[in-house]
Length: 454
Ligand SMILES: [Zn+2]
Image (cartoon, rainbow, N blue to C red):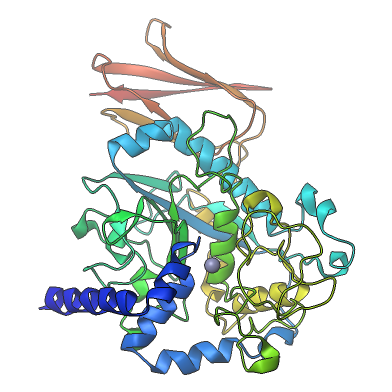
């Protein structure tokens, strides 16, 4: 019964996009599917239009935040890709590298530590804001088990459509259900869920690289189950490029697509207000943030400062280097103080992301209270079949290398490090059954654990 209703929805949406041709063309250039999804949902739930407009009212943004310190949000990354797509990004090792670099970018940009902030024009420098939000891998799963903070679902589907027939039918919802060959969310109140997929539009490739379904949108009131809260990102826009040969979408290889989508999750809107070129001065919507300049349309590429438009007609013009615009990754540099206040406000008591700050043990395993043992780690599964994971309960210190040897000391797998990740996966397929040794070399000690391979 549900299926028919959602098929009908998709049909209506398709007709709508065909009828409003100019809108459809404008949408083709969109890097982010947020605006499109809000519009689609409004067609079925008009009450959303009023609530969405409330977000564009500036009084919300200027409220003083009472949140103190720098909370860390537990993140779970769900990779839902075909084997070919997984291979394109380097398999498990490539995934770990991209997770490391993506988290580094999030923590840098949400803490005003991006070195390229020197490129912010002088006129906008005083507006450079520090969100003071950190992101960490979820090392305890909802069932209490250890986790590397990511999971891989090898799907038979080449990709997932933005409008589809699963769940709400909006926002790539099909990727968010295991029953549809996707991956189920982890408790969306406790964890920030990120699905890494191949996004499609009516079965074909799309320019949409990311999409956020924030808490205020994922409510039964709009036909969106809260299990769909979270972010979706193109697998070629996830992480930060380290080599020219890495598989990335051109212009979106510095990890800032996810910075943009995470900010949507914390209630930010696009700087141009998603109102088809109108300005606040002539009845257009705005982003509800007092210190971002009015802006008519989204930017693209890397504009040259100052760039003026119909809504900001004089220098310094529009803030095309704001993370909530569509410029290329290398030209996105800042949040403003007003944007920061709105984001932090959602993390306060009563805010719709408050629960993220209340379970810090989800970042560790096992639950260790205030004194986690330095460099404590878990080897699992044990016995192992085709792979073994080594998960640190906190970021390891002084880790130099990991070897896996047989009982005679012969090395069967090894890795050395120039950085410290908190999880490592070793492929064990093809090894004889038996006991193996996991050897971790730290600056000041060596740790050995046994693992059985079946
Ligand atoms: Zn967006």
